[in-house]
Image (cartoon, rainbow, N blue to C red; front, side, top):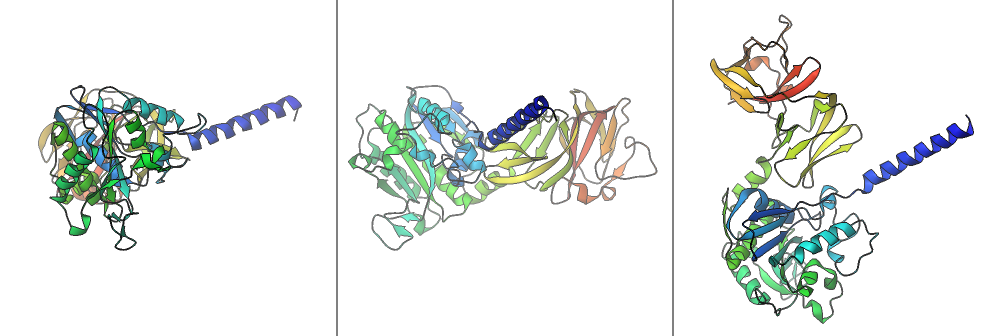
Length: 438
């Protein structure tokens, strides 16, 4: 091997190592979502500063996706430390909630901190609420290791009693009102909320580094709400939502939501009202009961997977040869790629569903009771995943009965929802999902 080729080889190896290192340490930008009409009475709601607190970031995401702000303004950041959420870590680069005093520009979280500081200091923002899941149950007097002044769960946190600002400076009074509101709707007596004043300015060196104290020093009313890590996820979210609504009520922000604030409804929304779309909705994939592995999933030849999630806590990360769908700190499914050229096609597909004609858009999810037929399409090839009939050459113009589609090829664990893929010569144009109703 010549010296020139050897040098080029070494440069290539270094470049690949740098690429791999970057892939491991890359940051994930947080979402910034404005809701309601812009005004100077804005609530800034923050979740996900620590990735091991799912009640906090899940509650914030529900405000972003399932609440309509009818009067006033709410800015939502549901995934402030998105990388830590995906890694299921308090902070891969250290605790982000201890980086608001001094921070080196070389810190991997530096850009995120600078960006959130800009929103905190925005003149429109009058109240900041940072959501957390805390250990145990906070009590003003020691009972045992789980119920003590050193615990953080089930409390409303303030850094000081009052702040000399025009609006919402009566921090302790506001926090007391919120706690009183929550305590009227407890799921269990042990879940009682209390106000916890950290009295940060009196020398609490750790709390001096936090987001809320930075806000206080910038003349902004700031609070933290803690739900106990001893509670299941949907109960933590329940208490966070009660707190958020109490703050909105105090601020005169009017809202409506798409579900009842009950543990049953919250669990249903978190677990089932989730999906992801690909390639400008040419594919729509429900995720509530998705199989852990989907094989031969159509992905653009260049390896770029365009997707639109229904929830800001959702993303897709390429890991090795697979594409992994993440939802908060859950890994929902792995996509094994079938690399193919993807093109846009606007036409509708004509189906017979249980004998009735229906025009179906690519990306739609449809349901049949007993059978379906795809009417012939001159220039398209159709592949019904899980249907095998060696006696036919084409899968259009043939009535397909429920029993003829093999359940093991379904996209869901129940064996009810199947892929119908459409191709124009050797190019993929879209997918329809068909389910059989029970």
